[in-house]
Length: 508
Image (cartoon, rainbow, N blue to C red; front, top):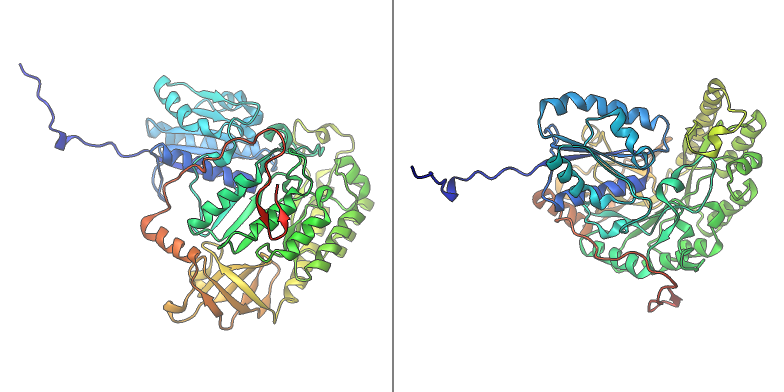
């Protein structure tokens, strides 16, 4: 009996496997998730649409935020019934918590298929396939960087804006922070590689980049150039088509006057600074191993505002660090008063196993921490409100964004960011043809200031239809471009070759 052959036209092609990435933590994790998405799409996966059942769920975790592990295991537990109901579904856990807990994850959640660390994002597709074929969990966590993340394919979230990592890791030893042990020592990319990536992004329609590093202004320490970060900012000013440059997060220890000058003198570097304070008490800063004191911190802010009077400054503050007294907390409030922050990310200290602070004496009672936290948040919000009210009547340039205004549909507004990064809700023109697209730029006059945003109820003027807006529009019909690696290698040993002279600034 002859075996029947199925004609090629009748062969059913299996649909691509669908993925979903869930991200927790800092901007570095958000950028890593873009790399994870790019890797999966490069391997043939497609992003699961809202409401679709994913075949692969990837958790990109944080070990810094409070109750990070409880949140992860709670979400893994919620996914178990879905995995049991859908044979072949896979779950992967990566990021800082995976780097820290490793085998603990599969012990507590044995239905997890893959665990990978912060240094080997590129291994994920292979680990998923190996777990599928071998039908057993794959745990691969390496101790040092294998490939700089920017060499990996990327699936960007926005057509007109992008993250650009200039370094990974951190050489500081803050007693409350576990990041150095999870991300490793600082590793810097060469300026030429960074600029090549920025130019490639601009060619795709990107007009705003945010330079990323765990300690972004320490950039250059690996190749011995303390002015490398200021030089890089100035070089960004020479990239044609790059409208806005931001960076996060700097450290007060490494914040030097050449960086302030570069910010003030480079038109596309935005008048915005996120400068972590952590505490206003010199005694607490010493216990935190923060290598600056409150007067140095305030001096930096004074010099920034002297160079850029309209700069918006935001910060991070921790309340209730071990041993913090009422006098220490009062010192923090005093620095907050003098700093006039446009906003602050405020955190209640909580123990992070593996950090020196976790075993310190005089842990502050939870009720005391909560009460101080509420006082701090109230005062931070009052100052931010006052600062935003002071913006009323100012004409500001807004680059419109996708998804920043969650109530835009109901309130007939379009939302974007001013140059100083303040959120601005703008009255949408009645004529749809005159409405800006995400990525487009216009000027508006501020008519109202709230604690966390500004409002412009008048006409928008000088609307520019930008290449970023064109790119956003193309994404709506064609989708994002196929993920591709930048093609840049790991940092090399030694001082990088000088780049060509750029407007009197030799970038190394």
